[in-house]
Length: 69
Image (cartoon, rainbow, N blue to C red; front, side):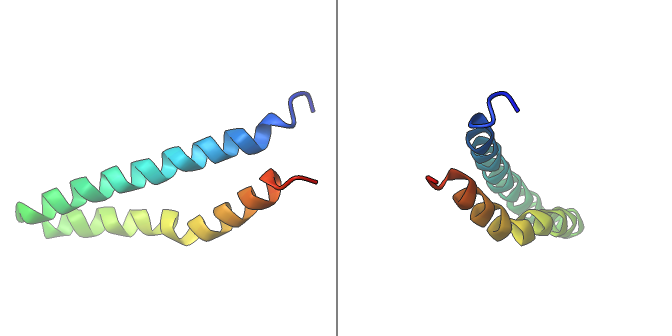
């Protein structure tokens, strides 16, 4: 594959974006909950659990990909 050395860096940046989006969405969820819409907030947090469940695996995989050989 051409530019295979770019793949780990690309995945790292995508993961950073994912974590930033997770934080932003959680802030919005908190804001919604404070305004009385606990159902919506619970649904959002439930969806964010997928990111949280996968976070450790992604981090470990990126560490392996970025490690010098």
